Amino acid sequence: MLSSSPLLPEFFALLGIDLILMLSLLTCLLDNRFPKAIPYVYQVVALAGFGHLLISREFLAIFGKYTRFWYCFFYLIVALANIVAANIYFAVSKGSRALVMGWFGAITFPTILVSTFFVSQYSLMPSAVLNLSLQIGVVLSAFLVGISMSIFLKPEFVKKLFRRKLEVK
Image (cartoon, rainbow, N blue to C red; front, side, top):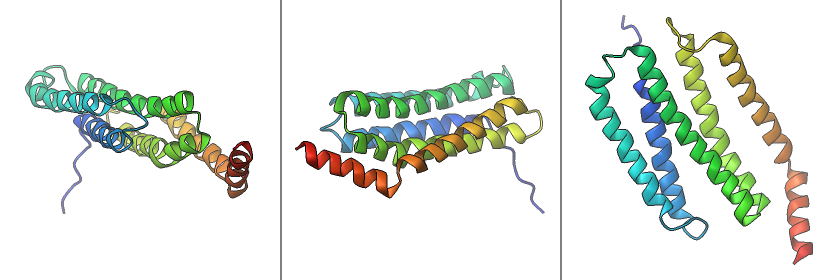
C-alpha cells in the first residue's frame, strides 16, 4: 500500500505562481479596465517565482522546512494580495458594484478559499508550522467571507442593483 507524501512547502510557491499567471491572463482579457502594462508585470513576477524555485532547491534546503515554508507562503500571500488589490482597484476606479461583486465571487473568494484549504491541510501535518488558533482563524475568516458573499449575491439584491442602475441612466 502506498503512503501519501506530505505536502512540501514549495507547493505554496507553485500555487502562488499559478495565481499570478491566472491574474495575468485575466488582466490581459480585461485590458480595457486595467493599465496596459499590468499583465506583463504579472508575467515577470511569475518568471521570478519560477526562478526562485529553480535556484532555491539547493539554497533553501540549508535552512530547513520552516524557512522554506515561510518564504513560499509569503509568495502565496503576495499573489492573494494582488488578487484582492485588483478587486479594490475595480471598486475605487470603476465604481461598478456589479463588477466588483462578480470579480469577488468568481476570482477572489475561490482563490482565498482554496489557499486556505491547502494551508490548513499543511498545518494539520506533523511538525506543523502554524498553530491551531491561526488555523481556526483562517477557516473562520473563509466561512465569514462565504456567508457575506451569499448575503450580497441574493437575487433580490442583484435585481435591486440593476434597477437602480437603469433608473440613474
